[in-house]
Length: 375
Image (tube, rainbow, N blue to C red; front, side):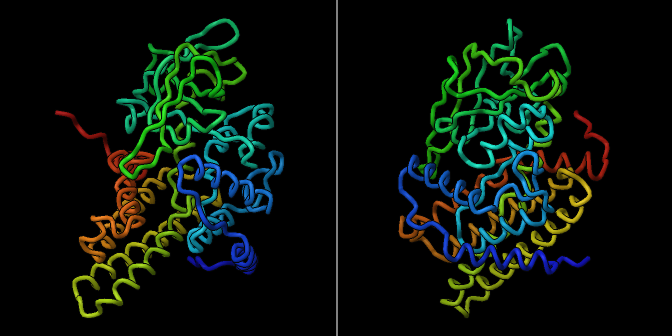
């Protein structure tokens, strides 16, 4: 299989590199609110320059190109050290399951960055086992009343809208009684509260719903049909090609090489860095293989869980190796950016679905192994 760029893809890549050389934003703010505004402005800059919505239908503001072009965009952003492109996976959910009216109402604002969204999926006790969620959506005149709690909701306290999963039929099998809604975070009864992480960031929040009303026309897809939407959304969220991870990891490899050059006779360090190079190359080839298969479909397959597993392992290996090369000073505050990177890497096998869940998906849906017997 030939993974090299076609002439058209190579021309696109070079045009993007030239644009990035003149447009990468500098001087990222120190505060959480400032960084959020900085990232939103970068989102709008990418959109105005025509770099977003590359594979999306023209009917919603896209360009109907191959998903390869979005992978090139994410790869080049990572290589250049630019802020990542917005994920867009919430818009994908509305694109695949929403009505034409809902698509016209919500997707333009998602693509342009003029409206900020968050994802109300995980809950206390229902993170990896998402199907066990307990937030309820009870029928009331004209719509639903939402009651419950969401956790680890990125940027909920800065967002105007939330894509929300809630249980509409508590008597159905747990995968079949879930529905999806979009709700304004300013709705009475919706209360986001930020969470401070080990890195010091406050980009995550918990969100409380106390009888918050959502109109029926803000349900996305059929009632009790939200599980398939959740799977599609997570498939786009998990893919390394969709979030530009390979390019960023290659950039971090160059930093490891520079550190190794200071101790060229350390054979153990050299072996560890060489393993990092190997893992990144394996991830790159796996991602390209997955992208090739996606050309015949409009969404990622369950094989994307293999990409997610490999991505988490590789991210943690590079971060751990760099801390070892830097020595004890990194833990004492001499390299705060690298310590932040290490702490953040610890979540790589948790966010977007834990490594354990990804292994279950690979076993059941890719290898078609029988379910494990419980004692």
